[in-house]
Length: 326
Ligand code: HPA
Ligand code: ZN
Image (cartoon, rainbow, N blue to C red; front, side, top):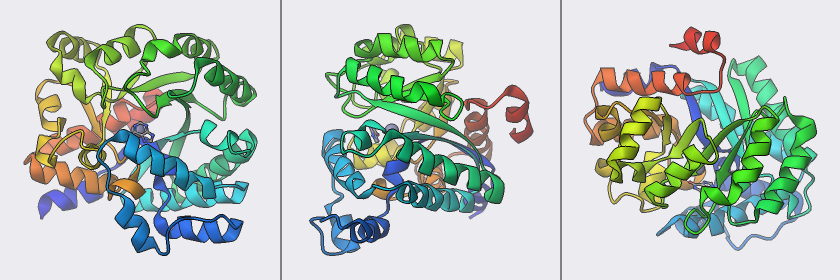
């Protein structure tokens, strides 16, 4: 249909993508073999069958287990390059990818090994695929703020190679206020700031991300729609929300794609974007997410174009570079 053709050809930026969440079962197997890591599955099919989640934590347990096969600089390169080739096929022109250094350093993989491999692929992607990029380091919110501060110290010599910080992992019980000091330090270093908020956590967590962490974007933000004053504030401030429809479905944040907040957010004048989150685990890359909401919510061509424009407008690109894309 015409809608699918529009989605396929529209230039897009992807703003909410965990690179470790793009580890497809085939690569999981290949890297397990290459590195001599035992995994409790006999085939890629068995792996996919295990990807039935009832909530965020269910997924995170499998996600942290999966990243155990990533060990060498080349592994991080291969992972990132595979994602970029897939993104190019969806006409993604700019990516702002998350990585979880603490998921690797706690297993004995050096911070620099992770950063070097991801960055080398991003540079190749820029040169060979024409995809510009920013790299966002996430703190795992189930760990302490002191651990996040140590991770920020490890990253500090690499400011310029790392462009921003984010906050991910288990949301409920780990509110943004727990990370107020480390986000202040990150901002002092000149890093951009974003945080997952309102995926499973209450609207109060979105308020905290804005007031205490002073974020420039809200990742997910679904539950902001429960709070009219918060909606008005997000609209006023032109705050970008990075919504992930297939992720929301697979993590039971919504019970059907038709319940995705994308259309309601558009109608409320919010700067909503569509993203894949962890495509290898949730069954689709960015265009799959666009098609799913366009069909289920009967989005117009103009609305689909707005979603793509919002992705560049809400990016960390300089204004002149945003303008080239919109
Ligand atoms: N939410 C929180 N943490 C995450 C996610 C997510 O969707 N994906 C990877 N880490
Ligand atoms: Zn996410």
